[in-house]
Image 1 (cartoon, rainbow, N blue to C red):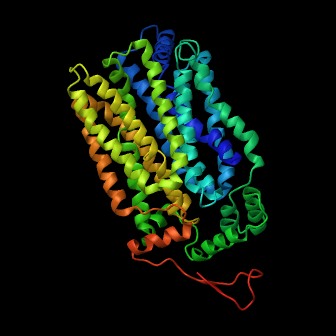
Image 2: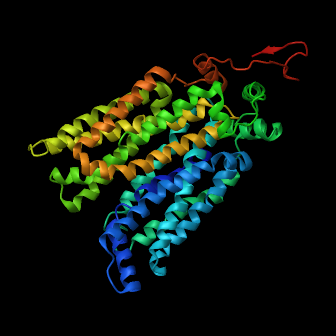
Amino acid sequence: MLATLISAFGSSFQYGYNVAVINSPSLFIQQFYNTTYVERYGRPMEDSFLTLLWSLSVSMYPLGGLFGSLMVAPLVNKLGRKGTLLFNNIFSVVPAVMMGVSEIAKSYEIIIVARVIVGICAGLSSNVVPMYLGELSPKNLRGAIGVVPQLFITIGILSAQVLGIRSILGNNTGWPLMLGLTGIPALVELLLLPFFPESPRYMLIQKGDDKTARRALQRLRGSEDVDREMDEMRLEHQSEQAEGRLSVLNLLSLRSLRWQLISIVAMNMGQQLSGINAIYYYADSIYSSAGVKESNIQYVTVGTGAVNVFMTITAVFIVEAAGRRLLLLIGFGICCVSCALLTVALTFQSTEWMPYVSIACVIVYVVGHAVGPSTIPYVVTTEMFRQSSRPAAFMVAGSIHWLSNFTVGLVFPFMESGLGSYSFIIFCFICLATLFYIWLVVPETKNKTFLEISQMFAHRNQTDVMTKIILFKGLLPRNDLVLT
């Protein structure tokens, strides 16, 4: 529990915080850009150049996330899961200091560069934390623990929204401190995470260190008797020894992992292209048209963030009972219907009661996305791949995640200006297509070992999971064999 909370707060929280931290004080940060330009050149900044600088300030974050995702496989194989999380804090503390002193230094360039670096931190943490926790967890709690990183992402978003209230830090003097606070979770993780064990699977399967793996497992389970889990890890190790450690190119060409790879690509694209960023982009104008006062919109936004956190907490408690597949289907189904109804409500916004329907659609959409699309893809990515292929799989999944995020940020303003409210019809069809794919292809993975999940995909891939006869010395009489 402590390893989960510390790694999720130290890493995942920062991802969510930096998604939202730049939104509330955007007006004041842009004023700083303009004032700095006037002091340098003696004339005000052109609107088009200010728009370009602000677009870079926002979009450099997902671009940094893409760079971070590309670093996942080499770092987790070299430094381990825990080691990578500790190393990753460099990409948080340094940009936190840079953004905190940007106003004193009178440099908007520092903010843009810092957003790239903190994006790298988010790209690494969004992949490594679920991998680390998935390998620490017992199989009966793997889903619930796997949702915790997403919970801390939503808590990070909510924290940024609360701090962004005008009377707190979302004002002309408080925004540098608000941007710099992202370094605090990193320092907490640097101080506390070294006291917790490395992933036992990494130590046994990739490092071949049986003793350290056993000690780590005994600490995590609070019991000396971990023979059964050690045996299961050895079975996995034996069954994939012939494959060796897989690179991304190996992963793309391996027939036995074809449908797992297609599935994580489909789910991560569906997660980001389903319209969640567009919903948040549109939210303020929807609240305004419903009669919410301009000064109160920030509080309604915080309320929406609180709903997101509450539903993610709900997902932690129901994922093991309901299963991954059902939550994905329900979540994408709710998002699909919400986008369709939102299109209708925005089209007929002049009708007296329609703006309230729009608000309801936004809240219901956030509920649906929090229950399934936001939370479950990370869990399923951990479960669908075994030790040798998991780092490369997270590298692919993370790259797709951040590339899709970047694409939505880049394309949606043009979609919105060209299609208006009909933009959400596109998101509706993307949700529907992802739902059908999950219905047809993705199996239920709860309470299954990693080896059992590989066997579930073997038929669709038209391959067999390698089987071996293994003798566990000292665990069984010498002449007895275990047939896997």
